[in-house]
Amino acid sequence: MFGRGSKLYSILFLKCPRCHGGAFLEANPYHLKRFNKVKKRCPSCQLKYSIEPSFYYGSMYVSYAVGIAISAAVFILIQLLGLNLTPIHIFISIVVTLILLMPYIGAVSKLIWANFFFTYDPSIAKAKQDSK
Image (cartoon, rainbow, N blue to C red; front, side):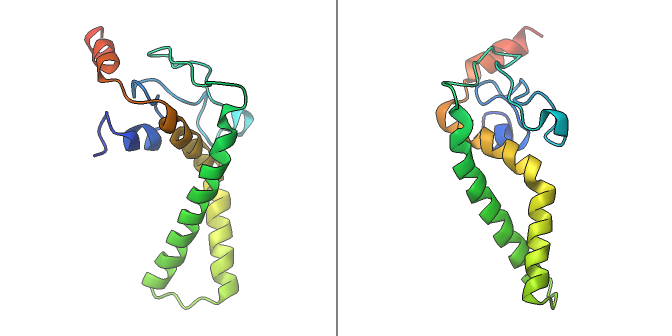
């Protein structure tokens, strides 16, 4: 489920959607100088990450959905832990969590968007593994 070949592997580990070997971003999402900057090509399989100009604008919709999911998860976690927080404290908890996770949410959203358009190719991944 989480191994190479699953879209979840590519998304969670920020790897190329086609070979699951090369890095998707130029730097760690929390490296604010190069905040979520996507590489032009995969260093492993040479896949061009951007199909067209402004390709990753669509990831804003995915980012919104991921943010809502995280907000709901924080709310449910607060309820399950039995924390007796006022609505304003719950709101602050959600906002702080979203602010702290914002760089990772942006990176994951771009990868989810890319995984809609690129599919895993086991022959490329195997060829790269055999050449090592």
